[in-house]
Amino acid sequence: MAEIERGLRGYARYRAWLVSDLVSWPFWTMFFFLSILMYSPDLLKSQYHLNALTWSFFSFILVSSFTWAANSLSTSIQQGILENVLVSGGSVRLHVTGRIVISLLDFAIGGPFLLLISAVGFGTNITVARPDLMVLALIQAIAFLYLFSSVLSIMLVALRSPWIVLNVVQFAVPFTSGAIPVEVLPPDLRAALTYSPFFYIIHPIVASATGNFYLHPDQLFLTGFVVVLSLAALGVWLEKALMRRALMRGRFSLF
Image 1: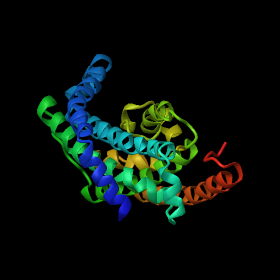
Image 2: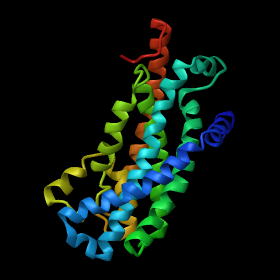
Image 3: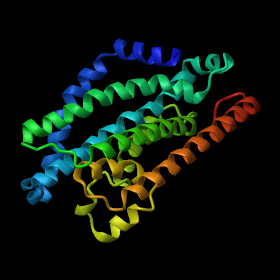
């Protein structure tokens, strides 16, 4: 509860984040659609593709919001906060929860705002073909991204400027996850994406909106559940490894 309260206080204190996002999202949305208009104008003439691409960008915002939470651990170490948290019996994953609260609030505002921009600005008919699976997909994605940001923060803990890596990650994950509607991709690339663990987390969001699942939903969600459990186990192992290295070397670093 203390970490959640810390996250809420941080969000209230830095309201400039929200203002910045509300200003930047319309520009990113227009850039996204206009880029597609330049190369594939026919896609924007189809309500199906407008809806699919909107949910694609919705997934990008979700991934980006949580990816930047991985920056919080390095900041806590530089400020001398993490040592006090661990001495008091806390854990790295629990500490990251405070920043995850900000990510959730950011996404809770940014996601619907994006849908509104697409509907009003581009005349998109926003639909969800499978609302039941959309709820399940979002819950699974949020659980995964929370664990992913925790693992990423541990791996980047020794970097003073992890934002360079995070900038790459926030784009690499969506592009390897089926965030872009698979039906607009070449067949070979569609098949290749199924080898990415991110595919079983992000693709169900877009597919639930369009109703176009590349694999059977049962297979997608079962594999996604296994991916989440595996990531949770990896996070526990990495945290223990981080603590062992810290005790041996006197500093937080895995490498």
